[in-house]
Length: 218
View 1: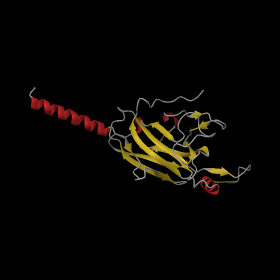
View 2 (view 1 turned 90 degrees about the vertical axis):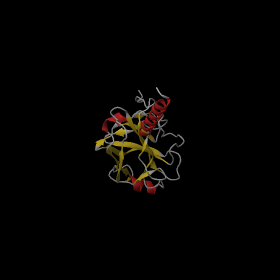
View 3 (view 1 turned 90 degrees about the horizontal axis):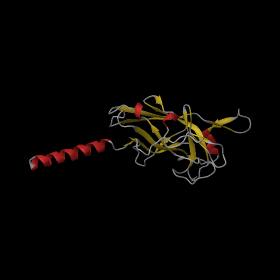
View 4 (view 1 turned 135 degrees about the horizontal axis):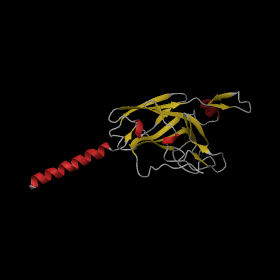
């Protein structure tokens, strides 16, 4: 092969690989300059995006952080609470998709932590993404990060819609379960903010070898 032709071939290969790698780069779903998305009590928001690769050939996950924000309170203060429903292209994302932690996990002095009961995901009260552990912290898995396999639901190189739904939650004021108030009011009365759901990093990315599903505890 002539040197000029050989050089052109090498350049073409490098450019092709560069384009392929760019197409595999994670897709950031939160475009806010502060890298966060707030979902007030009882509201819902749609996040629209394009998946640049074929998820039928490249397993893909939705990787995000979420918590019930408690401004000024760094330690976990309670939870989890079944509060969030997720839909991707109008299909509910359920517990079968959860990879990075078991559906149920023991805690130090509280009842076991359960992350999903259809159609709701549970979130922790927290004032930081990596708060110091306490009695409410699950022994296995992050209290704020979720990694869900969504390979089968994506439209490749076309419009996708992720819907974040804040489900109605009420809190009992005492032994009489008939006397209840919205979670947002409960948080305000206890100086825990207004029960806003805060999303941190949220990405669509190819599934890694380290994204093996963690089995539930026996």
